[in-house]
Length: 213
Image 1 (tube, rainbow, N blue to C red):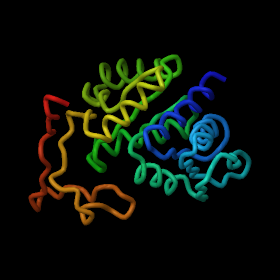
Image 2: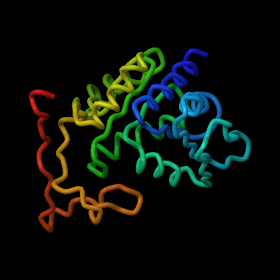
Image 3: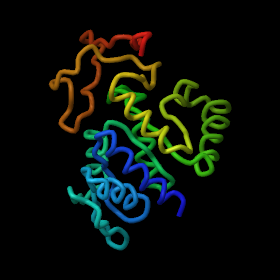
Image 4: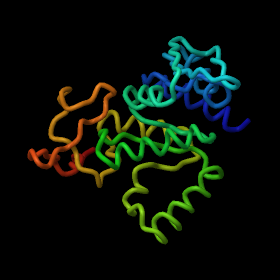
């Protein structure tokens, strides 16, 4: 399968850039990314979910964590990830994709890179977001479509993650940045407590990278 091979390559390339790889720990695309990271000698994490009929953990994990509830499992993804690289998947994949966008849009987490891989899979959804949600019903703004990137190139996806992590790239430039990253401003699951405007909570405007970067 083409996407299995691409996900395996993605796992390898992330390890080369000194990232750990975190997946849902199951078969298919999740297995492929874990396999790439595991065989490259990196940290390969599986956030597994107990299901009555479907998922068993794949064998390419050197850190394995089991969850009973999906919502707690998603907390693990958001709290510990430097970014999301999302391959074709089902409802669970869509759930994780849109939750990451919602958390950034509502300033519950600091902006981080979200990259979807596979234009043949994602193009229909992206067309619907533009034509229905943006143009017809205006339930999102044009800037919301800048919360993620689309590519067919795994190298590009990994580079976006790496350059954002090292400060050479800024994602979601339209969003304001928080004045402080102090731990007391976070909830236990790693999201922001929120801004109480009645008490003068403040954010600062989006910053610009240095011109030489």
